[in-house]
Amino acid sequence: MIFRPPGSLPAFFSYYDTPVKLVADEVGHVIGWQLSRENGGWKRADDLARKILFVGGDEVEELSRDEFIEYTEHDRARYLHGAGPIFALYETVAAIVEQADLERRPLTPHESALVIGIRRKTFVMFEEQLQQAGDPAADPSLGAEEGNS
Image (cartoon, rainbow, N blue to C red; front, side, top):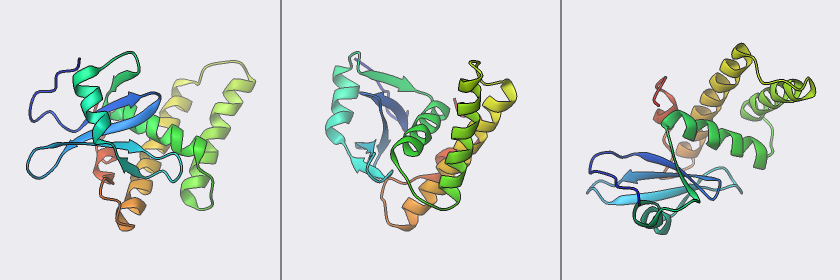
């Protein structure tokens, strides 16, 4: 079981390999949001909030804010397709990772920093688009601050 003291939200998790964020509403109730692999937005998942907080299990992994951003953008790049600046940046990351894979080596520190920086940028860009489209869970400010582990 994961105990979450009041005021320690937002909190970030992987639930069955899908990013989930828990936030508080205006009166302090915990709300769960799960990444939609269909459109990259957020779908309400209060049932997961209860499972994560009170049941736990091997399928739940707590993530730092930075890990959550990385994981979310990894999934968006993997499951979504389109045109425009965000997708061009996803292709850039894919090319960097693919080249390292072809050379059978881990990313260099420079490549790793580049990938992290690009994913932070695409996270903010994607969340801003979601916010403009009216997604109630979109929060570009999560990616605006550096080093939120």
